[in-house]
Length: 456
Image 1 (cartoon, rainbow, N blue to C red):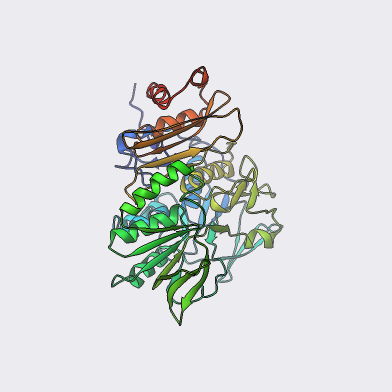
Image 2: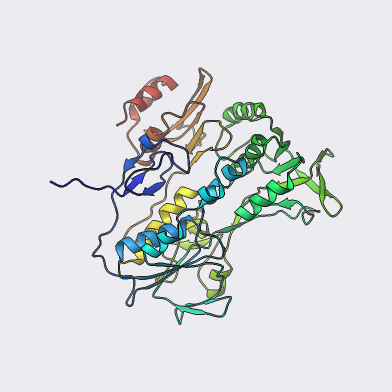
């Protein structure tokens, strides 16, 4: 029997899928080591039908969702004509690694997803510096800003999202920016030269990772969070308090319950005025206040939208031959806005555009930090929502553990410090494994840890 050559590998912690003869040295999403990766079955078959009657597929947007869609579509539709449209002049890159680039942990070359010949080898036409302007659903044509009109049989919209910039007075001042592109990362590095003080508005993942990256370079940085503790979507109050202690130990100044009134200065920003009257010096301000889906193209075409572009379980929009994936897609009321769901949705949209029938049924949101040097994993429900829920938490040997049990299932967890069981936690949550044995009597964290150790 000939040995099977595995071409796809999945990270059990975050769900990242890597294509190649071997898994990567570490997961580019969560940092899990090569040894943790597991073989993943390849979807589709080489003899699958080409996409659409004449096989012309357009993919608008070249982030991870778009590139994954192109890769999956080529696997299931070897005869399809695939065009990947990117508004960026550069090759598609790992956007989630921008903070690692900011920290100096990866180079500009290491940011690139694939070399240029990767696209040529797979007969994927990559149109760079190309902006989609108008979508004609009746004629099945996409108009580009340069006047070209491209016909399609299947269309996949992976146009992403843009940073939300709150309308603070002074937000127009020089050296005020978001962090969404490599150009913005380069701008931040240039603006912070000479040890200029930086304020990061927003204590979510991106704001914290940005601050951590700058602190690595010796730049004085302050994080402002308007909630009572950091990462309120990923951490409960107890975990948030412990996490904040570790963040401060890295030399990052923190302000919680901090509301920004104004960005002060002249032509350039000079400081941040808070609602309580406190003034913080700042020569650079990075705003991390969330994102908004890019819906202009979808609205213009008449596709059904809410907060995002609405999709069904097959990632079809309200027009059957138009799919959507990634940060722009709203599935069952959820906009994920993170790397692993975008990659998964892109792959599924690509397979379905190529004639497959693969469902996306949602995934539990999982969070890992990759820049601060603090081991943190959070998934699903992080606090009980009813009297029937069981919350088991404790600090053990400098680590914090929290597990939320609901109706005999593990509904969510927080691991701070020791994240060695993250892959097993995710497996139990995703597979809805029976945990009823843990709620029969008095359950402690050590009981849950012992249960997880036995998970295969």
